Length: 116
Image (tube, helix red, strand yellow):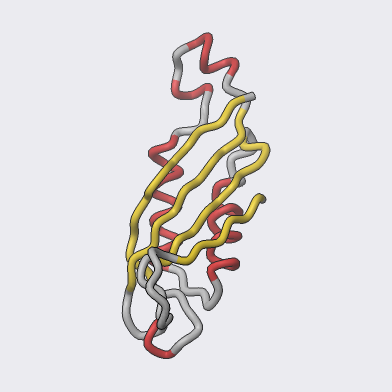
């Protein structure tokens, strides 16, 4: 087994509970950790023997950009569902960060992590 990491994927999306969050895109950052059996790819050096991180990255971007959810928890779970469509992925950890949350406190971001 092994892990494929996709770190710091940024995309604009419309996700949030507040009316202002539902009317304009805002930046999100996503990290994905795919648990995959990498033994075959490690021996063959063939892309067909592993999960293509480029294709996964594009799929994650599409979810953030084109789908709409109120909660980060749902967005992260949906991303995990998309990542699990490849049967070679045994589990996936997804972290979604909202980079400009509508809160009064000064903070870097808010985030959720789910394991699917």
